[in-house]
Image 1 (tube, rainbow, N blue to C red):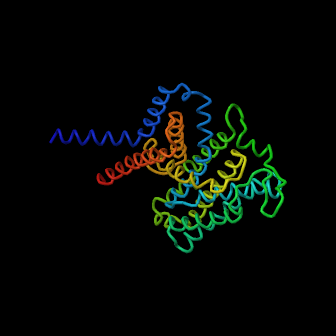
Image 2 (tube, helix red, strand yellow; image 1 turned 120 degrees about the horizontal axis):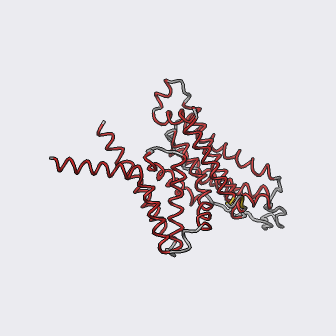
Image 3 (cartoon, rainbow, N blue to C red; image 1 turned 30 degrees about the vertical axis):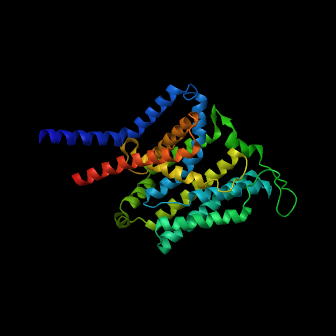
Length: 339
């Protein structure tokens, strides 16, 4: 019996350790491994490139984080990002609008998508996954119709004849390609947004209300919280972050590519769920989301250095996600059985 109890205790401590420090340990192992096989990996230039590469995914994931906090889920962020991408480019290339409108209008459209999501979920009562899945297809169809299936770039030929007169301005491209204080501008944007999301979720009354809504909606209602307004705000924030990701993507690549957000949706979702297991949080949180994106970004960067075929990357990403979820839910199950 003593040997059995000791074994159970060791297993429990092992699970607790993996739950609290497993993601960090994995990151350290990844960095050490790739550093040992490539001199180009552990360099300032490479790590700034990694941070820049995860900036768009992190913004997308922060939006998903807010919806998960309130007990929901947003599958439409990828399509919303794609819509924002082509809309941003078209406003400059097709309509030659000023920069301030180019930055504001896509964000307003993202807010509108969030409001439509919350209408379907809160007012009509469609489950989150089904509502946002439907919106994903609607928004994707809309942006493809809007562009007639073409990407948008400087001096592009128009289907009506002639070429577009507008161009993506240097000031706009600086947002995605410039540097400030030794770091790429997208990295600064990402860090500021992560910090804002962290402060809001962890150190404000509204953040506590968001977590209360997701944890126990009935108790939140009895406390005087308007569940509908809270959920609506979470989906609007998700739409805003997705639009910001689209703007940043356009500035980064210098064109409005259709379906730009589709391949990033699953990376964003993976980043959020990997973040569950950072320092034993066990719930969606901004720092964990950033850390999850960093783990995936560093891993993919190292695999690229190894010249691993790109079509095998999804296997690795899936394995990391499954491992993080397994540790999180095994730990949660053990805590539940002990109470």
